[in-house]
Image (cartoon, rainbow, N blue to C red):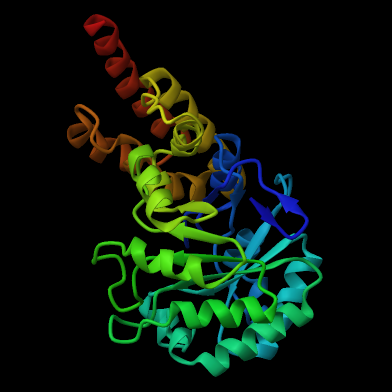
Length: 328
């Protein structure tokens, strides 16, 4: 998978997810097999970049390249300025968001709402590409709703504007995450353009990755919610795509080590107080569907400090590992 001068180690990409794909999670997913990890979306109004929230979202210190920063907005001039500022801060790829279905984004005529205004799409892409000294990529959905499917048209506009890779989520903006993913719709986009196309949506297992690649013919796969609490999904999918074999899930001791690595990075990145709060959602995902998690989770998530959080998690996983040993 090639994006401009950047060759990705694997054709697997961590999707940008607000409040999730911070620097600790991006670094962890890269270590575990993602060829690229896109930052959380940042607003194109650079006057907002002085807030702690934006500062952390733009933090790329020590991050392996290529470093991709996603920007969102509706004003071409603001998007161009945000592009320049992101590059000054170390971005090696600029990603444009035209796929977010969140109301607070769509109500500002940004994200997926832009798909309903092809002229503005053209203006934004021209402004960003014109302002950028690094490759520019674009993330879209199939359209604003099922009655207005225009992803192939947007894809052609993107290609003509100089976009160097296109990620397509196989749903419309209106359906958010509820309808089944339309991989055939992504395949139609792939057949329309020559630039690399990245398939996105409901890829949670190696089997689903094989299916998505087969149906779409995509050059790469983008994984979002499937990596929550399972960042090793990239290693498993990479193995499957290369060999056709489905590797097992990691054992409990490996899961515990990966989780602890992730939590330590969160405490370090945010500081203990905020880090403990941010860690809670990730802990919930790491524990999902595990034996006894329903009983243990409430106590763990109420832990007020790093030490208490880790102590309760260590006790939980120690009991699980003992059970695994006895079963073996």
